[in-house]
Amino acid sequence: MKRVTLTRFLIDEQYNRSAVPADLRLLIEVVSRAIKAISINVGKGALAGILGEHAAAAGDASVNVQGEAQKKLDVIANEILLEANEWGGHLAAMASEEMEGPHAIPHRYPKGEYLLLFDPLDGSSNIDVNVSVGTIFSVLKCPEGAEPNRQPTEKDFLQPGSKQLCAGFAVYGPSTLLVLTLGSGVHAFTLDRELGSFVLTHENIRIPEDTKEFAINMSNMRFWEPPVKRYVEEMLAGKTGPLGKDYNMRWIASMVADVFRILTRGGIFMYPRDNKDPSKPGRLRLMYEANPMAMIVEQAGGAATTGRERILDVQPTGLHQRVAVILGSKNEVDRVTGYHS
Ligand code: AFP
Image (cartoon, rainbow, N blue to C red; front, side):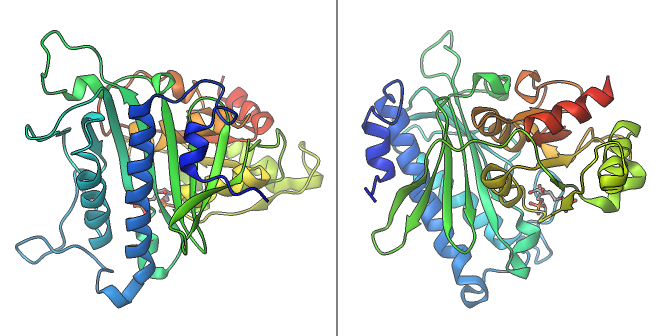
């Protein structure tokens, strides 16, 4: 089998309908190198003394802007991505789940036109139990500013997901995978640890429009809204119910692992709005989880909604805002979204 590395994929126009701008190629290459470094850290597990919770200076567990306990690897992954990306001249600024506001490019480095957003380590509650985790990233173009060299503000990031130029995620599992879309389909690369290169292994991934597999955290059932309750009950009724077929269930609690499974064999993933915490319209973050995953899923022929609207159409109001997520096999997403109207 011809071994096409990520580098060749980005340059060889037979893989991309339109040429990938050099600065965007550099961004993707740099992010892929950071993903390799994170993969090495994750792979060391308990041997590196970096499992468990990150202790703030005071010695107690630190919490991130979400008010969630930070794992040591959350902080390490965030720092790896910041350090890898801040000097290359391809970025105007960065934003991360782990940081309150945008991360400016230090004045000593050149700046570029792209904004990079990321969840450095998604699924971090799974790290200590050795279950797959990942990194999710999204690329936007920085709006033209009135004055040159102005520092981008949070407002510059608040663009709907339909404006993304690129989206991707890594899965640190039995193998390390990089899933990528530039708007011309979805492709996955497997890390060849001997070469240190990402090699194209899944070209033009397509999600089957139908499925018999759903992913949801069932322990929240009593908090769901009626349309989701109805849909899940219909699937649980299987052949005896209105959907006329039996369903299987998976819930890994690492979005990257659940989404990659859906990319490879179909399925529907739901983290719907629930009334467990009425102040939160969902658990997952729009800018660096839902939007990149929605672009990838749509580019693979699937669908992604909040239950009420297309995720990529949501006009963001805050860098860390949360949103309900229903994504995967198109016919199933359309069905449950239809129940909401
Ligand atoms: P953590 O990063 O805090 O582990 O959350 C992971 C996640 O954002 C997403 O990857 C999972 O699908 C979802 O949360 C799991 O949520 P529950 O733990 O409530 O099932």
